[in-house]
Length: 288
Image 1: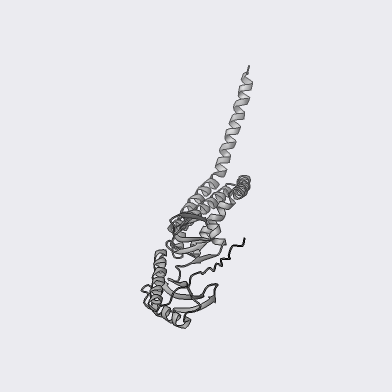
Image 2: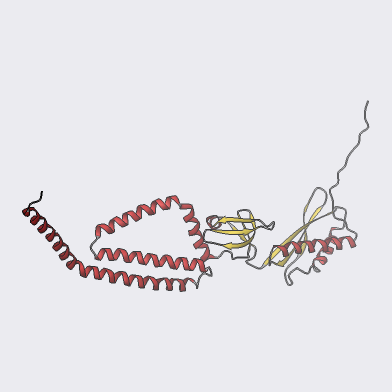
């Protein structure tokens, strides 16, 4: 049972604690006010940094999603920096050290667990600045050929001529060689044609050359030729080459079709056949 003396002692102890806390609050009040001012200034500065970052990045990238994401990241970094500065003003050095150590350990753990995801996003940021392709370009990546339908931070979507959608991680796009068939706006068509050995090869190449002049999809003022390429098993291979404007894969197939039809009709009118494989079969009499 507490006596009057014990109660008085407890009261004095509480009074001393409260007075100590009050004195500490009075002493730390300027630092607290300074920390609040620091946080407010950093919050305002973070918004300005975000706007400035977005405005500058829009000059170099047309990917608005990427621009605003990077602007948000810049804003968060400034706010976090302001938080650490405010804790330093409050002389909470141990808390700052603990937060930094915890953030470092957490960052290492997350980096190890999501290294492939982080690699895809980092590659996406680099690709957004380099712009090796845009939506609609015809490209070939890791053996996949088709039109780019979407460019994201983590992956790019490619539609093949057969209609399938191939999702390619950005780190693969960044690391592997890439062919962009739409960058120059031109594409050369190579058409092999087998001619019989016994035909007049010089006449045949002239006929095919004149036929290419009638191809409507051939781009004017560009080179086109028909040259003998090599001797095959059953004929001489001639290679017809001409350039077309390359808006899309459908135009490419149509241009090939038109070129082949023009040369086949011209050769037929000239009485020149296209070489076909010939098999010779010897039938020996049956011996009894």
